[in-house]
Image 1 (cartoon, rainbow, N blue to C red):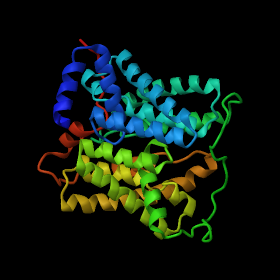
Image 2: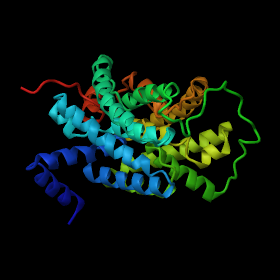
Image 3: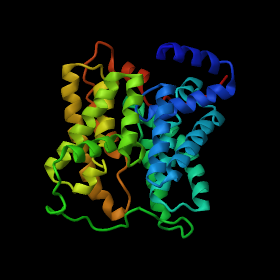
Image 4: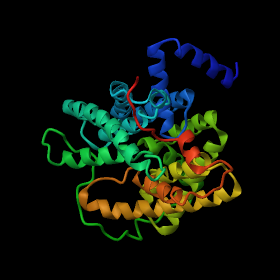
Length: 347
């Protein structure tokens, strides 16, 4: 049975049952992190997150991601958001990332899960709010609801004695990178592992096998998207190395994930792929690396990570010129391909 035939069978089954519709929406939400609308892609991505988080000794990450995905999607249903939007997973992907981020940086205590559930619900509300604001400029919210909500939750954790801080870096003045620590072993194995981790780090997973599974998941949806993801992590990693970032950060894929998302968004989803678009997306991907460096400097005194903010900023900057690379209007491409439509009451 082909993938397309399986997909049609799945659609037929889920349309008959409300629980099936909700499950389908959650799976699509997992795939929407990578700007895809495919339940099989979402299932493979969740499997990759589960594998990576368990393998690295952080199972709370996959638990948090799944819980937040469900809570965020259910919140959209309760708020009577546009049915077509939540059915496509557009209210699930940012909460999923919030749910993965909090256990990554905060101590796994009982109260964390309350914090996480509230955060996931709030992320959906923020998604609705930002979508209303950003439609004025004709750009999608992307993962900014996740970024904004997580920043507030992580900064707030410094003031809450019962919300313990785990791997979150404490506020400090930024310093010039050390040339000694920036030395990188230019071996194929080191670079390949770092680049694959760059794909997995989109979901805050530090595992190269997970990166492979995620690339396979993208290929199930679109081989062009999978190729763009590969291009993004390669370019992001090499640019970071060329500019002299810390070697351990390269090895952990920390300079690849924003580049991956930017390359996918600009090179394969929001513009129709072409040689001109590839060049434009390449420039945007390099910009994302530079924005990540700048935001790291700016946020170090606050003690919070950049998350996917560099991707959001770079992609917005390269969407706002509204370059007509495709024969269809740019605003239609945005509406059909990504991010969030505004909510409206059911009638």
